[in-house]
Length: 120
Image (cartoon, rainbow, N blue to C red):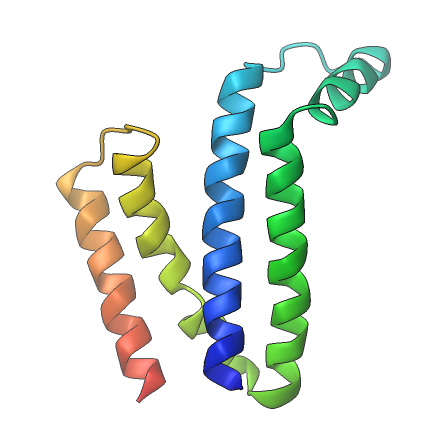
């Protein structure tokens, strides 16, 4: 059960983060932070299916994380779910077409190594 929840968390968080990045790029930079302008931005984002999908995926991740904390220790749950950082780096490169430097690849590799150590 523990590893199933880890899989759900990793998948949902990764999908949620990629959808959020894509949705916010589609929307564009927010430059006006006055209350009325923020209300208009919120209304626009509430109609953006990428942002809505991101919110749904992150909600799934959150509730799966709560479930994981009922069956696993925090010292296991936090590091093992960090594998999302490596997956998000891969998706940033190939889905979002971001330039990912060798330093970021090295960082993602170190995260994978840390997850492997914790999962033993």
